[in-house]
Every structure is written in structure tokens, then in C-alpha cells.
Image (tube, rainbow, N blue to C red; front, side, top):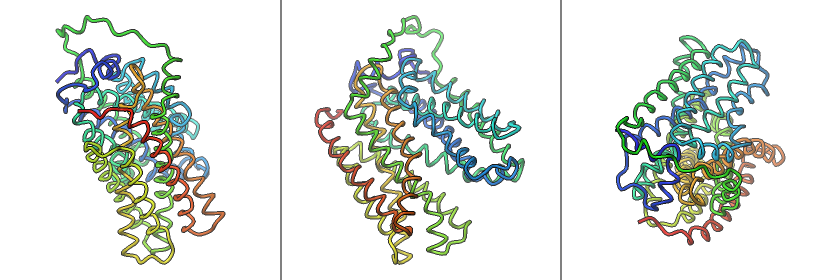
Length: 424
């Protein structure tokens, strides 16, 4: 099944803006391929988690350098997400997704062959660019090939790519470590990205006989006005703030979880690691739930605000002192399940709130930039609060502040949402 030429190079933005309801039929084949591409990109996020001890032992990494090895892939998104998104809108969503996968393949191979720390860190930074190109091009293209009535479900499914990809890496890496070390993990991730790039290129190729092939592409919008329109979009800015606050809470809680499980609830380290992987899958279930609820007539701002309230309430059960073991574990599951609703809602509504033609990937880029900032700032901020107040229960102070800010942002989003008509 081929993708029409009118989706390339400006895939979703021109078609979507011309028709607010989008295509009548959802192209599930392309949707599946785009979902798979995003999962492959997320594998690159999770692959150092299990391999880090082996890398540190071979290359003699310091604790700080090891931290940068994990974080560098998020740095470029935190610094330049909106600019990368604007470039994706101009270069083409299909081309950008394919280029991102190719970069992931090349950089993964370079990392596998790296003779030392400098090359490995450089390749990791470049993987961040590949990750951004893939995960910004994919949702914009997905929005173009999906019927409006399926947007909630489709983007709910798509938003599970991060927990599924990282879980796949965490589960698969130990097998590869036993048969070639950490370099085999990097090589396997490189081959996976290369293989998926080939599959995506074949699945979305334009038929040679297509009559639309001869149509000239729409003119490029000047870059500066596009950026100005997106940065002035109240809806997109609110979504970026909400996503930053969510990722800051999510990663901070995930980082603190092993310590809580081992120190407070006396789990063995390997049991704590398995439980941490399990809650990633629970979070994916929350993504699906959020996508389904987005397809109902419930206001999106209300979904975000309600999820945040329950998220914080469950956080009390996880982080407060003296909570019985059974109740704490139930709250832990609900904490990640309900929290997973938020990214699904954000991703599904972001293309709708894009301020006009040629701005879908730019808008999603700004939202993802917010997410990357949250990933970078959240854990250090939470650690500072825990250090200053003392004890894991101090995480509740951090969660309370972030949750309050999220609810305020959701209430602001209410004004914006009331000005957008719901899709039919």
C-alpha cells in the first residue's frame, strides 16, 4: 500500500489544513510502520540502561560521564526541538522519518566500533538528532494518513512507543550482553534501525505511475514566520509546559523507584529492576487508555487535570512513610497507569492545535522540546528537594509543586480548547 505523493514533502500540514477532517479512511499499514519506527527510535533511549556497567568497566567511565552517556540523546531535543521540527516541516515528514532511522543506524554502528569515550559520546549525541527526526516526522505523517475519528485511538497507540521501546531494550540487552558484550547491543540497535528504514521506505513509496507525481510541491513557508506563529500559539505552549512537567515527574519517580523498592520495601536489586520494567508496560497501558478517552467527548484539559490529581494521590501512596506494602504496590501501578494518559492526550491534540499550514512538526517539536527539558531538569530538581528536605517522602513536595503547575496549565488549556471545534 503506497502513500499518495501529496503527502510528500509536506505530508500532513497542507492536506490537514485544507481539510479539517483529514482523510476519510485510516491507512493502518502506514500507521503500523510509523509506530514501529518510533519504537525502534525509543530502543536507543533504553539500550544503555542495562549495558552501562559493561561500558563503564571497559572504557573506565566516571559516574558523571556515564550519566552523560544516558542523557546526551535528550540534549539536542531540549535545546533545539522546535527548530528541528520546523526543518522537518520544510524537508518533508516521510523523508525526515527515514533520515532519522538512517542516522540511528549509522550512529549506532559508529558507537559499536568506538575506540574510546569521545567517539561513543559523539555518536550518542548524533543519535539524539536521529531520534528527534524520527519521532517528529512520524506523528506529523501519522496525522495525515489517519481519519479524524481515529485520531484518539491512533495517537494513544503511538504514544506507547517510548515505554515499549525502552522495555524492549531493557529486556533484550542482557541476552546480547552474554553474546558479544555492550558493542553487540549497539550493533543490534543499528541493524534494527537500518532494517526498519528499508521497510518504511518500501511501504510508503510512491507508485511510478501515480498521476500526482508530476504535481509541483507546495512552496516552502519562510522559517521565521513559522517559528513565530508556533511560539505565539497559546495551545502549543500550554501543551509543551504540561509535557515538561509530566516527564520531569515521571523520570524522577522512575529514577527514585529502585532505591525505594530496595531500601524501604526490601526488594532484591534484580527484583526491583524487573518491577521497574513492568511499570513501563503499565505506563503503556495508560497511553492506550488516554488515547481511547481522547476519542470520547470529554474535554482534553479535563482529562489532563483529572489524571494529574489521581497521579498525585497515588504518589502519596508510593512515597509517603508508613504505607502498607500492599497498598503501596497498588498505588505504584495506578501511579504509572494514570500518568500514562497525559502523553497520549498531549500527542493527540498537538497536531490539532498547530497554528496553520506547515507547522505540525514544528508544533510537535516544541512539545517534545518541553518533554526533553523535563527529562533533563526533573531528576536533578527532585534530587535537590529530597536532599534539602530529607527522605524519600520529600518526593511528595516535588510532585505537589509540579502537579499544581500542571493543573494550572490544564485550566489555561481550557480557554484554548473552547476556541477549537471538536472533530466530527
